[in-house]
Image (cartoon, rainbow, N blue to C red; front, side, top):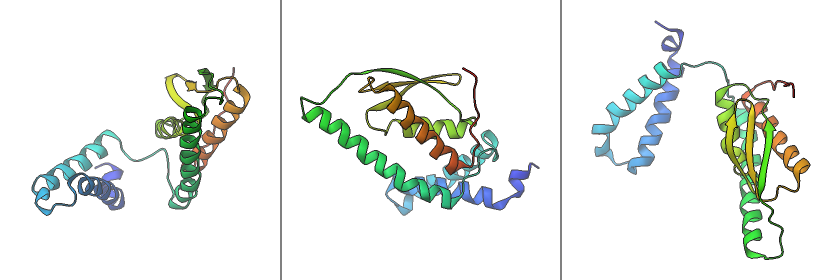
Length: 169
């Protein structure tokens, strides 16, 4: 038996995540558990088989410290885009930027790519190896955009306890 099956906390954590998701999807309707219990059990089993624990170690304090940053960036991104639409004088110079990723694990990369789309006027467009293609509403501010992306990457790495690698150009 694999070590992740012997750790009951891993199984219980995943079971709880899927149970909460089921509750949210069904408005906590008690009768839904007729179908939900087997689905949650199967989802837990499948997640343990397809994605065994390991690699990224998320700690609750680090995740909680990321929440204010995440919320602030979401708010800032929404306001920035809204102002660009509402005020005709604000600069909109869309373009593509390339950023070399320093995150290694797939989980960290996925979280980073999804969170990046919340930065003001940015969208993760493509990932080719270690090169991230970013669409920006204002591509004229290349250095500022690059610095903002690097800052987010550092935050994600810190939250997940990952060491960023330095890549050759």
